Every structure is written in C-alpha cells, then in structure tokens.
Length: 339
Image 1 (cartoon, rainbow, N blue to C red):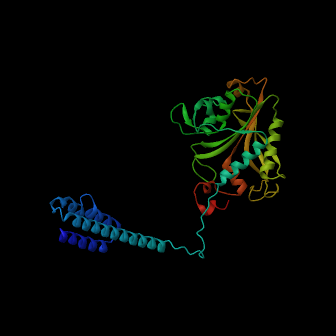
Image 2: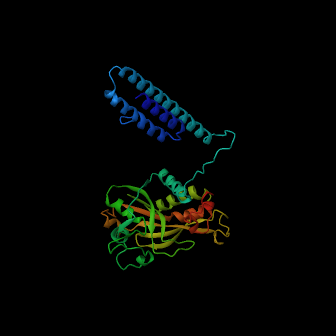
Image 3: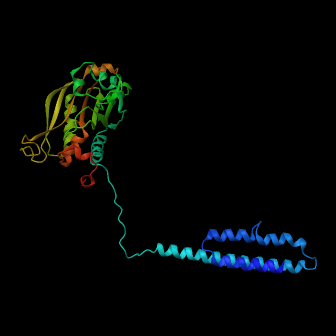
C-alpha cells in the first residue's frame, strides 16, 4: 500500500508540473482526487489493510492528498498569473498615442430641409400629419376631384397593386383623410414619400418626397394663401425674396396657381441659377375646390380653404444649389458629408 501511494504521488506530481493548460490541470485533479480518482480507490481498499496498520496508511493517504492539492493549487495560481500577464501585454495602452477618431454621421440633406420647413409651419400654428404610402384610389384620386379616365391620372401614372390600391402619387390623400374626420378648423402639412412611374434623370425619380399643406376654416381667402406662402418663402429663402403667382389648373383647387420666387442668387436680375429669367418655380397651390369639400362632408358655403404642395427634393436642390437630384440618393459620402 505504501509503495502504491508513493507511485501515485510521483506520477501525479510529474504530470502536474508538466501540464500546459487549465483544462488539462482540471482533468488531472479529477483523475487523482476525484470520486473515481486513484487516491480515492486507495481509500476504498483500506478494508483490506490490517487493523493495526490502518492509522499509518490513513495518515499517509491524507498527507499525499494534501501534498497533491497544494501542488494543484500552486500550479493553478501560476497558470492564472501567466494568463493575466499575457493578456496585459496584449492590452498595453500607450496613452501618448493619438486616439482613434470615430466618424460621426449626420442627417441627410433632405431631412435637414424637412425639419426647417416643419419648424416654419409649426411656428405658424400648423400641425404635421402623416398617412399611408399604400393608398386607396379613392383617397389618391377620386376624393381629389380626379375621377376615372381623368387626364390628370396620366400625368400622375403610378404603381397599382390592384384596381383599388396603389402607391400614392401625392400626400394630398392625407388631407382628405384629415378632412373626413370633421374636426375643424384644419391647419396642417403632410410630408411623406410618394411614387410615380417616372424615368430617372436629373430632376425626376420614381420615388420622391412631397410636403402638402392644407387650411380649412371659415372666411379663408386667396389673400390668406398668398400671405402664408409669401411668409414661408421669406423665412426659407431670405427676407428679400419676392413671390409671384401665375394662374394654373389643378383638379382639386379652384382658382389655382403656380408660385415663383425671385432668384435668391442674383436678386431677380437673371443668372445661370435661374436660367436668366430672374424667377424660380417652387410649388403649386390654390383654393380647395368646393366639390372636394362636399365629398368629405364639409359645407363649402360655410367653410373655405387653401392647399399647396412642394417637392422636398426640389427645395433641397434649390437651397443647397445642387443640379442633379440623383446625387441625393447615391449614398456617396464625399457628397453627403458636405451638408
């Protein structure tokens, strides 16, 4: 028994001192000191030892266990320290080195312009309203005085899901939804993405953004429309900008107009930016057609209103003097981080 213990001791110490990983060390501990380990087997065979020798053998087993446990603990501590030292070497920080600069993004130029427009109209007492991009034909055309086979449908050719559902061509559909609620008066703008079957070029895209505005109240006149848009243009383009209203036709407004602003680059004298005309077209507007009010349950004899719509991309191109709309969507950071 004494020889067996000595053999176990020498074998265990030799293997412990040559171990090269923490997992291997744990395996050795189980092999020698575990429930089914070699030292445990010796204890189980104590019944075969003569009674008078059991105290001595028992003491030898305990001494051997203690020595092995101390050796295991010592090796574990040594290996842990080695791991920590190796990790510290890899994680050494030279505080004199310059830091790694994090590249911070910023908002897209269209979002910057949208926030500016929203701030202007919120300051005038308007609220910002949104609606679905997948819309019913009724809200996108019918309720806006554009019945089936109307020529305006050709101008706003869009993507149909079926005969009744389509991708909206204008955010005017949000105006109809708000008027249907019957909560008057209304002062709102409706920014959002719209879709048309247009070819991609410097000024067109099958997906772009609009900002539509609507006011419905008692006693609203064309003078209110002109005053509102004149104030908006001055706040957006500069206090010296002048506005010009040209007669136009829209199915959902009567009378209707296109709005031009004097060129804010040359002051209206004529330059490359305004193509020598001194004026730049920016949006369409008009008084809400009485038939549109009737279709949403508003009495046109008691209430009147005005509406306007402007392309967000167009405002962005003008404000930042960009000559190609495609630059806004190519995700070229060399371009986008200028704003």
